[in-house]
Image (cartoon, rainbow, N blue to C red; front, top):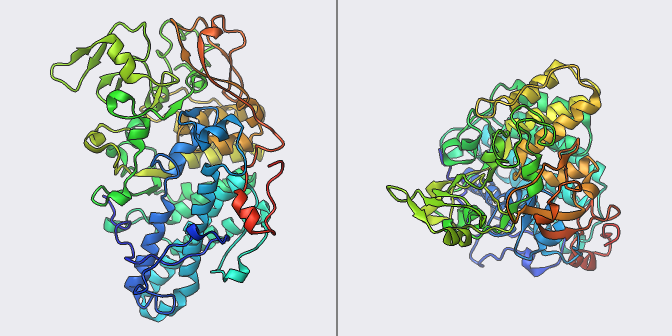
Length: 560
């Protein structure tokens, strides 16, 4: 059921101050609006303020897309064609004025300040609310603040820790080390979880749950290599017995799957309020779908998916370069619009050698002129993303109300499997976790047999996260955690072969990275851009220059 918690937002938004003196960090209130002396006066006003947190957490830094749906296009598996700040981050030529990083930093501290306002003022209404609403509201504010800090430290490392509303003279504060921030995040989530319910109904669907708090704790622990904490938090989510995998992987990212038991927490959208929609279909769709294909997947991602026998394409007898998308892990076609597939009711073709293209919007289907189809479907890499593109959005592609998943059960199972392996505790529960993901009915890949070494299982987990979670916002942190970003993010970023078909499969390494050195017609692959990665700099994003200039206590990340 669609929630309306994002629609019940304060008419006058709370004034918040981030750790910067920039004027655009202030939400201006009319003079007649509520002040912090009077707000909040009762339970209804408290709920209004907490509801507003979800709206601000679900912001879109680029092309109207939520953060987790755009960020993978600054990694080895995707590309942003807009000559944008995200493209710069992917290419390795970002600086401290990068607007994508700046926007994430700015918005994060707006959210944090709003959480702090609520937490600082909660006691004003303690006697005017029910104990359950009071404790839940406090837990929700702590959850959203911790969630926000979680992605801040993933991208920037150490950042200022702000846990109260700041006066102007207090605004200049130094970084807190990343390890201390991870401790803070996990402590906040541990303490918030007991005051959050397992689930909601009706208009409350979309609020933070106990499972969401434990899941973000597991993610934080994983990304900070706190393996035991990660395994324990993931196991706590599993033990809730609240979540199961959705049978239909493709439907999970459509309207048909947005109430799935696999979803632990998702941003909720509702078209009735155009301020609470997102423009993901417009950014991802090809021109025939009246989109811009701004964000596109890479050839290396396409080649990473194995064949249905579980072997890489350079090893499997099932791989045929003449029909390269046949006999492949079904998640390839669920994640990416492949040539020859039906995409937004058109046969998707991007190659001049294609013999036909059909429009299935008409009854009967009509043939589209080949050159017209090429022009209409053209993407820089020859592929489009398929997740979160639903034909139901056709009447209004720029105002999708499809919920965007932030945490789902498959991620928890893979966190558990990775953490158990890194602890060198590779038991049957770890195999069961990864096999549940691989063997959901619509995927049905071969199970992983027991008896693997730690190194072998590590390779399987790394690749499984790629197959399962591509385009959902995890690739950046995965590459950093595994210390392979300098390998993955250096050299040619390839699109589809420009003439004919691939002559042979590239070599796929233990992390799922493709090596095209020995591909005979490698020159026919389209080089989208040439990337560099400075391992002494690029494992962290730059702190926005304006923050360092206005706060002398804030030290820039190395080599920016």
